Image (cartoon, rainbow over all chains, first blue to last red; front, top):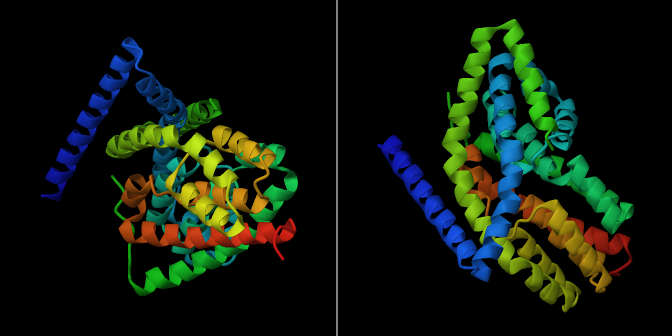
Length: 180
Length: 159
């Protein structure tokens, strides 16, 4: 039943997308200004996604096949201690594509035995400390701004991850199943 | 940006060298995961192209013309409900700074922009589930508020 609903949802989304693209195309033909601006905005994000998503998912697939569960448990799971926060933040800093890539990666990590605190730290840090973004920020808003932002946020991110983990473990909550 | 393609091609070749079967399996998993989330991403793209339409002018007008408390609140809210790539967000912040907007307000906007994703909810919930998505975003909102106030204090804009 649920699968059927998903299929229907998928089809609706594709129809919506095709309708959207057609409207944008018509806007370009008839030089309809608002439509063209929406189309330009669309291209900004679409270009990023085409650049990032296909290789990112290939890497996630390889990760699923090659990385042993023990490795993840040792570094991000039960037996990892405090170093899992360092690893999560390092992984986040080097994740290209921000949260769009971080969500599926976090899900895969979780199903390989990473703890909640690791994946929450990872996702939140992925939006906060991406290296290329931070360099751009420092050059426009000043290094002090970036240092304050990162310096204040990381301890809070780790602290909230620990609290959230406690909460979710009490609730026996589990993340949605990964495909395959 | 194309470095990600190079990395994945190298990884695929190495993987193929060690095991043909595992590599094919990896590609199958990749395709399954990708095709499952693709409609969600497409919907997100449509929403984002509308969000970006209203944001630029409004942000400059409203964040530019308000006091610190109202400014922070507006910054936190606009940052949460909008989403834009860094190469638009940072130059925009630069303009705000030139217009005399405080670092504190800019921090509230930039931090929620990155950490809190109201528009990315449909995608995030597929991977984290509804509950974790909502809790994470609420927690991030408060962290962003703390960062903004800390920025204000350290720049000497408050107290």
